[in-house]
Image (cartoon, rainbow, N blue to C red; front, side):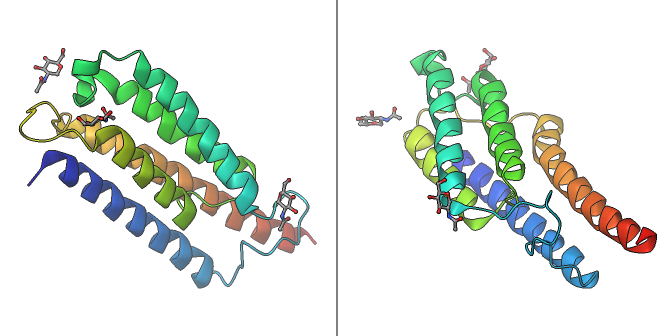
Length: 164
Ligand SMILES: *[C@@H]1O[C@H](CO)[C@@H](O)[C@H](O)[C@H]1NC(C)=O
Ligand SMILES: *[C@@H]1O[C@H](CO)[C@@H](O)[C@H](O)[C@H]1NC(C)=O
Ligand SMILES: *[C@@H]1O[C@H](CO)[C@@H](O)[C@H](O)[C@H]1NC(C)=O
């Protein structure tokens, strides 16, 4: 399989699992996290979300310009830029009260992949998976951060119920 596709596939799988787990958690606890009862739980605004994602995309685009054109399919050369981009989408989505990942963010990330990596193929023999350790870390840091946020929110809401 084309390594580019494989990476995309892995990423999509992780995003899907992550979303399911997030939903499962909030269902199991009977807490509707999207419903804002508390002032610090912001309502996700899709317009603002897309603007934020575009800002992350522009940053990624300018970061990628610093990578030599011949190295733009070599993950070793842009893994740092990609990580910054991924982190940017996650932090900003959560800052404005949106879940990460969510369908709009996923669509945006896929469009970014298509834009930057559509020319990367086996013929160029340059787009390789990073060492498994790096990939695992890259994938699981956001997953755990998201889970930790959800657990924290659920825990806090339970706690404030108890204290009330
Ligand atoms: C989302 O934000 C935009 C820009 O700040 C605003 O015009 C719009 O009314 C907001 N939408 C909702 C549903 O709050
Ligand atoms: C991909 O290749 C096409 C045709 O060779 C070129 O026009 C385009 O700019 C390339 N895209 C990227 C992101 O390098
Ligand atoms: C990617 O870049 C690294 C570091 O410069 C290099 O060692 C590796 O051979 C490159 N991989 C490919 C497939 O070009």
